[in-house]
Length: 85
Image (cartoon, rainbow, N blue to C red; front, side, top):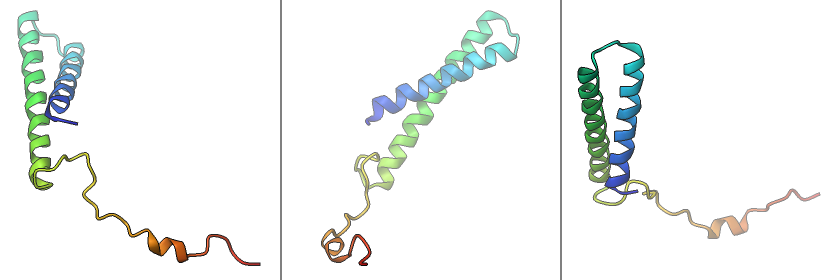
């Protein structure tokens, strides 16, 4: 997942928040549309910042890829899988 996906999802979250705000607060149409636009831009900026922050923490790697050390599989061969009768 790249930066583009994160920004689009953040913008969609801002749009949903703006639409929910439209149902709760009665504002004139111009102010409501400007508020919705601001929420869309704010959501996209926050999502982009979260993605870039995650890249900094993972030292430039893709945040959706696991950074855990792979498990050593050879030990699992010696563990009995079913109890002996």
